[in-house]
Length: 534
Image (cartoon, rainbow, N blue to C red; front, side, top):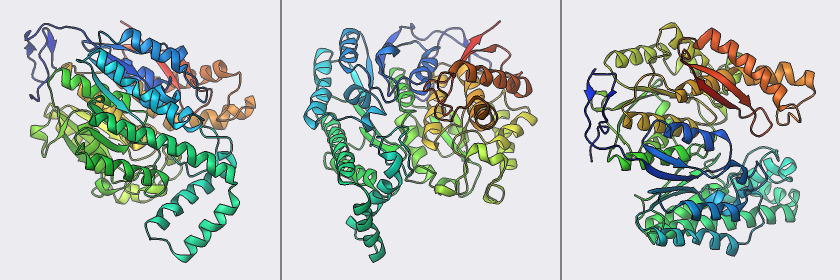
């Protein structure tokens, strides 16, 4: 297993100035991806990452993949899969999509356990018909949000969400023998407050989904699924998710499957992670990653929405993508610069709010000045430096990005991500870095440009500006822009163009923003399409 990328004729690696000579004929390999849902993060990101590779990435037509709470056309999806799988080397598959119709429908469905397990078992037919096919699958442990909202949950979660979360937490610590008398009294009161039919519906669905996860592990044992990731979506230390995770871990350990089943925080980035893993395997490479933090205590911090220290998640993300962590930068193919928080859990900051307030730990418990100096040093040593910007949730750390601008480093970064959760960011930047490394690419590419526009421009800044300044005038809400998608998108595009003019002229010299849209008709996520120009 080599750690160097395959050499392809006429490619300048941009670091030592050599033109690599042809070592192998470039042959297009076929990878099929059944995504978690139809949003850009699950559909467009992998397409963008695969664009400059020698891989032909096949995805189902977007129109059969459903829309938010509306499930995919599952029978049509299976028909498309069977029709197109014969020439594929890899199948990367979201079990949530194939069994329930997507990530949100997995939280809403009324399928029986028998129906779900029969659907999943159809992967055996796929494997039997194509013995050379490698199946890499992922299936979430259903989340338990800690707040009242039915935006992506059953309708009753708007009224009982926070109480269901608390019920789940208390259920877990009672079963672990950790509960106080006060905890037990609170639990009994919650049982009276939450209607029986609500709890029954929620818990029964979780039981079905948990059975599907255990069946997926069994399919790894039987050699049907070659590699499985079970991401933890918006997880916490205790609760239903933690209990279900332990059942799966017990099964994995009992069958000695630790090398084939990974469980760690994440969700929307996993399609990219498995694409990177497949591409590493196809090229017989294992990229070496050196991890460098902005905060001394950063590796031990448990990020908001997650259940374990940041460094443990990074270990999982790197090896899930097919890489290995090394002890020093000299041995590294990629230097992963982690802009880490110094506070975890609910105290961890949200990017849009950081302009107005940041906990003092962001100044006293990390050192951005030294972090940027180290980054400059590694770049000066011709290291491929990627930034995992996880200091805040839901967007970039504007202080860091402004420092990179001032130090003239913004166009010298190998890859970058800073969106939504820590797990989303890590999986995105690691997979981009590894695929780019395997392609012997250097310099700015469209995915890097997109990350700066989306994670810094939109998530950290423009989203809040539109919510505060434009939506009230239009009579719209953050989670429902009604029939004004195009109008709000035009406002977002104008703001992004202004952001580009102020910050990204150098980076975007070869690109322009072609289209902006809101895929789920809300402000939370955005679609940005770029056009390459001469």
